[in-house]
Image 1: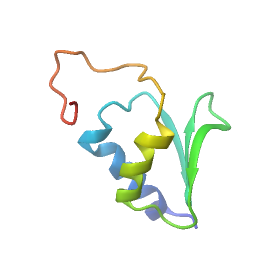
Image 2: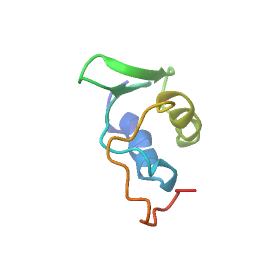
Image 3: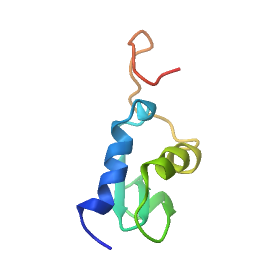
Amino acid sequence: MRGPDMVAPMTVYLLLDEAWNINGRIFQVAGGHVGLLQDMYPPFKNIYKHGKWTLDELRMLVPQQLMAGVQNPAPPAEDLQVPGRG
């Protein structure tokens, strides 16, 4: 299960307004594995499923599991209007 079609859902997720607070991070995406890298390798946190992720699954699991408790190393300025920021 390799190929760009397996990476595309995570790429699209990171382009969504709701992912506004994710920046300065490196992700490893292969098959059904999505990992958040801290010091390059091995992944610091990861989520896995057999098969290709859907955008809806990533919208639910990335904030709740993969990014839970992870600080943004370079957040946008407070006075900057950012789509998705509540």
